[in-house]
Length: 176
Ligand code: IMP
Ligand code: MG
Image: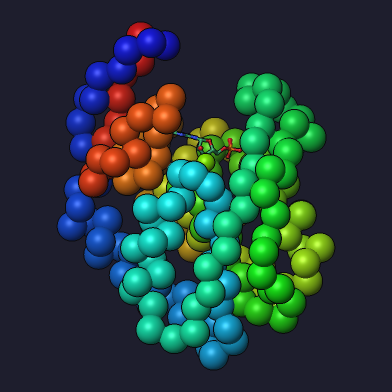
């Protein structure tokens, strides 16, 4: 998998912007005044989290976590490791983990289990993209931007070999 070709656009800038605004409104409505902490999972969700946060009007704090997975193809969720933990105290808060894409679900399953140790008031998952066809563990996001088929996607923060994060749209690729 050295070269890739962008086969087409899945979602353009306007579609993303519109959906991000809807998600922000929904999260604020659900939080119902409880202070919100958005926890962006580095690095893929940076662009999404930045846009989502700017569509919110009330009290919002931002934090980040980083996880790395070894042996991506393994069925075991024990391969995910925490590289960076929370900085903020999230006890009692409306904590929303922000992810770019849920694939097998292993990363988020691990992060949720870890995050619950910090005793948030509520722990929610918000993902821009969801590929339910590839799930290996039981995990459902509370907020989903778009459900997508089993395609490899790039752009709007999402990378292929650390490239293409800067694309303003979400495209899908052919690998060879
Ligand atoms: P999983 O849900 O633990 O399998 O891993 C999700 C992570 O895999 C995402 O946060 C992405 O970093 C990466 N990933 C999954 N599908 C794609 C894709 O189509 N393009 C780019 N990265 C992906
Ligand atoms: Mg990621």
